[in-house]
Image (cartoon, rainbow, N blue to C red; front, side, top):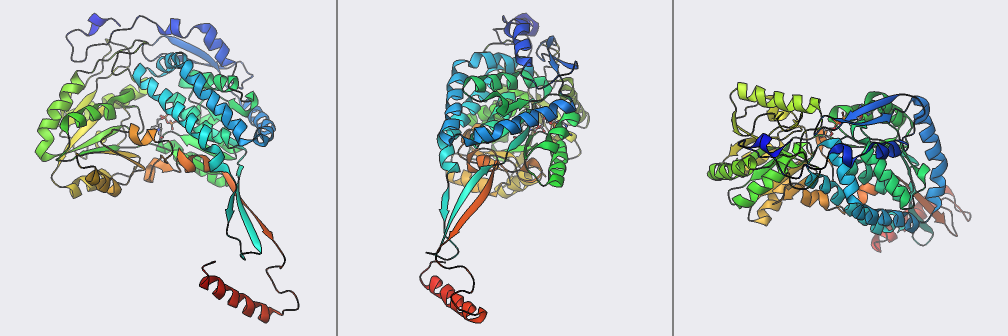
Length: 535
Ligand code: NAD
């Protein structure tokens, strides 16, 4: 792509396209990383770089015996890893954090090469993973420590709640945030004493393999984190069938299937799924900030972000002014495919994504929607570029209205009352993320409390809630089950175990008491405990 290729178009390309995918990700690096896959056969799968369409990697495919071996090795290594102190394991996370910051350029190249996203959006992954590594590195000992609980009979019974690792966690991750969604969820699993068998999406496996290498450099025993690769519907179920717990991130459709398989085996699963996220611009919002926020909310990673905004509700009194600012900023975004900072948006990841985005936009326009900005594919920039797009006049019969597009497309809707806006935002089976813009943060919090989404950002797009790694993040409704981050994000990878010790007297008739006398005595005891607030 050259700069002149886009001159005169609404979205000029960014400078800095000098480094090529081939020079940034040489064959020797691919070959080294590929050795990290647990695979023994001859089968390989080839990936291409979305930015240019050129060949990127040939990666080995794991057969059933390889998945079996990955679990066997992980299972052998896990008890030794769990026997180390939490502080020792946490030290690995903290060293990983430092290495990641120091070597970030390597992984930024890989993420861009594998996903096609702009470097700034790739850096969001480094930010998220570094924050989570520091958080769990510092807080794991506190999350996992034994906790004294009130015993059955105060004074006679002492109880301690302990946390034990689940064993081997099966982790299945998608392509859109390959560093964050392979490492981010592995961090708490590992520090809690589990081993991990990860099946990343093949398209973005190099990023996951690089991260694993860095973890080993930080002190992780290599067998504790296994990576298997292959076709999702083939290898994915093989992982679910063997795991002691499943951490799945991906579409709602696949998530349901994973949940069914996990339920059959009576193993737990956390499911981070799709969304159709809404942003509300209230009448008193700062429109410049809201418009800039909407650009981040809708077009980061070309909208291929589970928490990005695809429905934008604006108070009628400010709708025209907001839309003018938002459209201007959107049309000024620089699309670019360079492996360098400078572009505001990169390309989509695959032909499948381009097909969905194109279909949603074209169908909507044919049915009467208006294109306020963007609206077209940009093959002049690369095979999978699509302009950041704003649609107006979208109606419920259009697929773009309710289905997840997972691309750089947002629809504008107007509202008159707060109740109307809240009801419209909640009128979806999904419940992942939302965003509210107002100068009155108290009002923002009150509106947030009425929204049925796992995270709500007031005066920010998504990064405020997602980046608050001490707080849980995840979806309500069809957006998933369970949470990453915070206490829930680590305790999901543990089994609670209560150890209670009884002293002096048993909890039953003793010392010559018959059953009736015991019942009377215990009844009196319960009343006394109530009076003294011991129970
Ligand atoms: P997907 O469900 O097609 O694939 C996700 C992963 O599951 C991949 O590794 C895939 O190979 C694997 N897989 C496919 N079939 C499987 C099966 N039958 N059993 C087990 N595993 C299987 O999703 P995708 O298109 O790769 O990712 C995009 C979706 O992920 C979007 O819907 C997006 O909203 C969602 N997502 C959610 C979050 C979140 O945190 N909630 C984050 C990122 C992406």
